[in-house]
Length: 180
Ligand code: IMP
Image 1 (cartoon, rainbow, N blue to C red):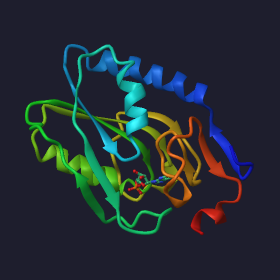
Image 2 (tube, rainbow, N blue to C red):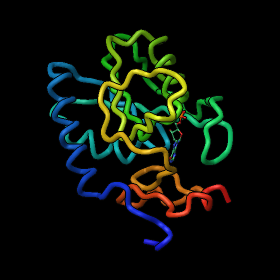
Image 3 (tube, rainbow, N blue to C red):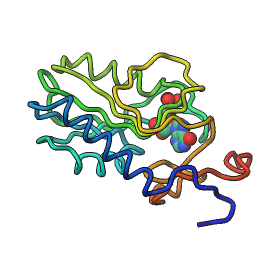
């Protein structure tokens, strides 16, 4: 790993929290066969780890969202880049997202899913930058509340669009570099 980076959450710490969340989710959704929806791109690594720890029969659908704007700052204008392939009506939907910042992306996606009349909607988010929230969003399960820093790895996009494959969640030591 480059020495310009600092580890925010280690692989082992993430794995332990994901296991604990999976236990909570399995208990809460016991008796249902939820449709798990990783929100792409960032949510796929967390979703892959989480779903294999769930003691539930799940099906999987994908939703893709991107927000217009600067690389490190969401504009609030959300663009759907991929839609689900099966109807969600009457299904128990478990939405899985990597990080909530302003909340605008998740609020948009939750509204979209609700408009399709699921039996229930719950949301699992790995990272919450609580201090940055602009709109209220309902998070059913949260992995970690983190400070207002640009983080990447474990599925999250880094500076220049790389580093999603890192096992840890990291940040740049000098965050001014993230803009360049
Ligand atoms: P929000 O709409 O402001 O809540 O932003 C959510 C989206 O912005 C996430 O799905 C990520 O794609 C991206 N994002 C927000 N903060 C970070 C970060 O620190 N690193 C990488 N992506 C981020």
